[in-house]
Length: 175
Image (cartoon, rainbow, N blue to C red; front, top):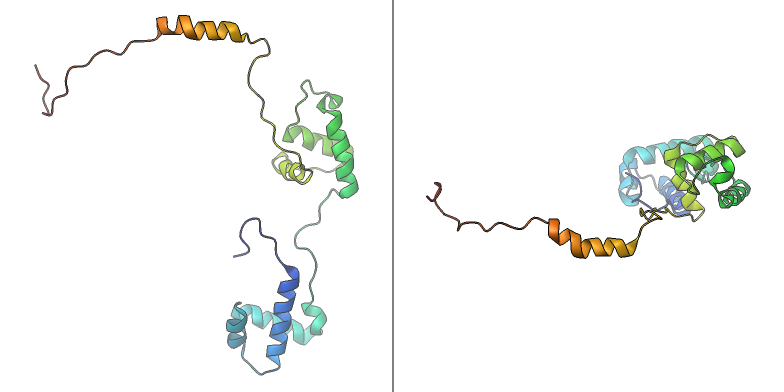
């Protein structure tokens, strides 16, 4: 089930809930009643009871962060920002545009860490870098000629609407 998207787990609150269960173990309540009071699953209480019997309070203490440890530490991220600011031309690319593939190539080359290009945006977001969309207009664009074409030439070549006959409500065409 988990948390809603973007909501991080509160490990301290989870630990407090486990220790509430330990207090309820002492009151000779069954697992179902403890689960109902703490709003958790029956199997969860059973697992907590077994862990507490085998390892005491230490077995129910907070284990720390969840998930895999990041490959890039804070010093590496600081160095990565400096490398990104130097531009992709230093890596031999022709344009000054960072793409996820290019950043993945940079990280692989300089840090010897292989990231999938589809996950690079997460690292960039952590570094407060945003997605940049190219304008999509040619540098040689002549605004005066474009405006002239829109005002003069386009109305000449635009198709005119043909006047239609009045619509009939019958299924056959009017003659």
